[in-house]
Image (tube, rainbow, N blue to C red; front, side, top):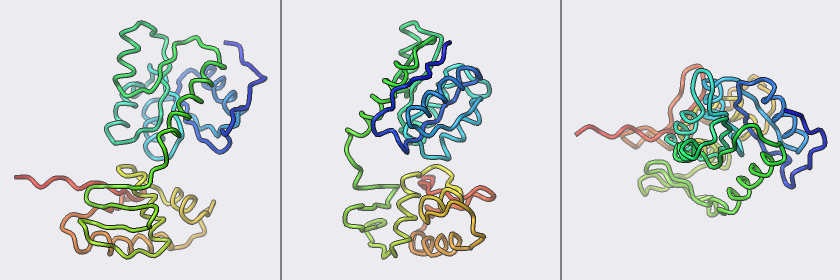
Length: 244
């Protein structure tokens, strides 16, 4: 597959993050270099298990997922993400090009399906189309996880109809957790996206704010939403339904 060195820079692609999950090293390099030249920030994964972890733990604007992968196959990755309410646009790559194969890919939750071999220009155009489609859905102004609701315009938060009085930093912290509900959010992710730190300053600022937020969010309610994942980070998750 010949690499196209002169790639048209995508409008508005600066700062957008793409995760490419592909076990063929040459194809992975081909796609990643082209996307970087087009202005995207690119993360890579060469197997399905690692790719699923990254797609679940980090925030991406789009995914490029090979169908046949070691560990976890591409369709399972997309199906698992959709089951966790992760709707990041996903372009599936595959050497399987029959109609039934394409249908399986789309029904698994893929947003598009591109058959190998392909021209990079077409892959780029398809990614741009997915991103335009995502933007055309309009900005999100309300977030909801279980009985917890957040209005991003009025900055009001309520759980089970009861208003929660949050400080500005607590609001930003909860907003980030709600946007990544069901995913493990690491300390690094919080430092970079809530505090704008790009290194760990060896501070307990996260622990202090998580503790304060947990008091307001869960103390007066039977089932907690905010969980600590030991050795990994934190997760905002809908509680299991009470049996019976």
